[in-house]
Length: 364
Image 1 (tube, rainbow, N blue to C red):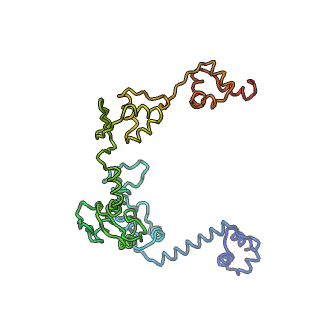
Image 2: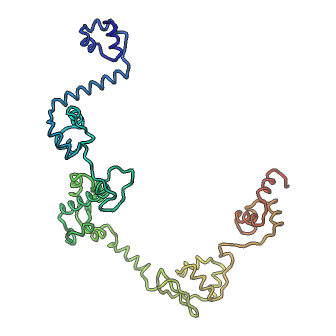
Image 3: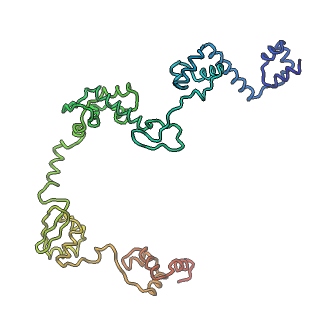
């Protein structure tokens, strides 16, 4: 008896369970097998078994008819039967096990489609669930349905211009918060519950898109309109320019702008000022200034051009690199140090070795 009690204890049974199996007091079993302690795995397995027994007792109290269960599973599937019969998934599994019903066969086989019926989006090969309408289209339909419901809730017409709703113009209506009590944007939260949307709709007014834009714009500000008229809407001002000179015509764009410049004045300005400054003075582009100079045979100095050319021989450049750094040579010719390096590469001068030798002290 003592050996059997110790074996049962090693299997993971409690003292009370062993006493019930052998018909001996728990005190004597503790004396025989008190030195054997249960492991964590055995305790967790014991708790799991106890929970299963409790759930089985709970499922037994809920009596389910075999015929009703078979018929509902046959025509509706597992998830639908849970909703119809008001049972849990565990209880259905328990009664299926009791009655010998295979749940896998009872699962409703949905018809699979190759693509969505609304957006014609093809389903991927690894996608198991292939419904008639894809999830994105379902959420889109839900959002649109809640928007139509919201429009009807607020009267179905614009509060300012009385533009009414019909079967097509749902997109033309928007929700305007008249006060600064906005918690969420209704347009981006139409997938939420109707009760939450309804609370926010009570703070809003229904407007058409035209009226809503006018309210949020600042075109009714008289100061801004006066400034626009003074600065931009003059008769002689146009963004797209057409320059007409006395002898020659240079066209830029479609609209007209008359610019008259003296030849002597332009020659003096080109010598002293840059082309960008001349363009800003006459409210024209830099290309227009260059075309005027071409038509009037005015030479633009080389300093106005971006690319500056310089002539250096290979021997002279090698001597300069041995004596001076690249930045100083660049300043001598009015170019950058990268331009000097590029010229060295073009003339096949190994400037990297020369700079390295310079650091080591080869050249003095």
